[in-house]
Image (cartoon, rainbow, N blue to C red; front, side):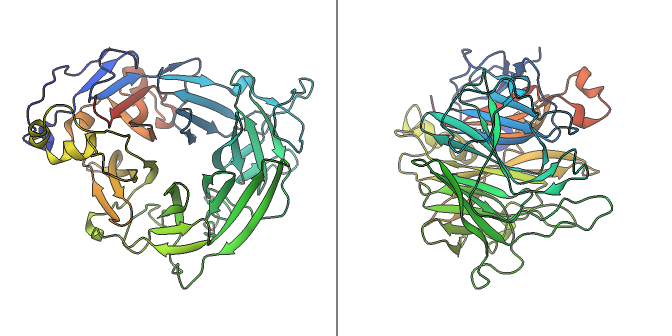
Length: 445
């Protein structure tokens, strides 16, 4: 078991490279170190730990869980479905428990037909969302590219598949009937606000080795569920972005709800030929969920200081907890480096913000990806501040590579694979296991 330095104190930070954000390798979240302000690298355990390739993640913020979906390899096999619990650092494989239930109009839990044996369809590039109905919890798999025995080459689809994960011991799925029609979307941005799912962008077909790239869909659709009559309906279908508000070159690739769902913050998609995303003052927008209008975010930060050349990225809304003052005296707080203050402590007067995590290439051959984080202070500030974790010793010295990010409560989690000998011996990097998690607590003790 590897373990980094365990020394800690409250001495001032002379520079970011000598940051006091120490890392510790511990066995469980409930250790004596879990409540301190440290980077904590922990082993991920479970009955079947997934490999890093082709995992699609979605966060269940209300329960503090991360669901990970992996498409089936063939139409004869079912999908892989995992749930990660950061409190226990365990991954639970739900795949073999996943059962089919016949389509019905209601999503209220009822008896699963145990005689019906059917695998979850093979779907690439879907949009994922967590939906709650009363005490029931569902993972929605929307659109994507579906393969069947009848269509082995696959085709785009606009279907809604629901996986009931309320009881993780008996998860079950079905294809939900939806009123109305909407264009199939692959890899669209899905954002849930109350009983609605907002879908932005995506492409009309996958990018194959001999095919033209998929066309970006510059439109949005809204899927609504009526909790009273148990009806799903496309209430808005394929509405084009208004050209007077959203220029033709703008495509959206990610978004988060802000201001308690009153607005959606939309970020740019990756662009050809580099397949990288670069933020500018002209490609970040707010979408008003009441009036369905777009508005430029009017970022105050200069373009040179915005996230750029991101191979992939994610973002989560962050609302500071109440009474979030640093421990100790004001003098101690002022002695911390500006980077540590920004990363660890948020004054009680701070409003909602968004944490962005993106991966940039580094190294001589640009073949190494490292995460970096930014904090987006919302309206009226509209400032984006780099948190400079890429330069921090605590990240560089970790014996692991990280591929996934989540913000749950007041903790940031990076999931990845350890630099163990058995992992390094794997020829294909996609075969590496998702077996470590780096935790950074952003609230004080």
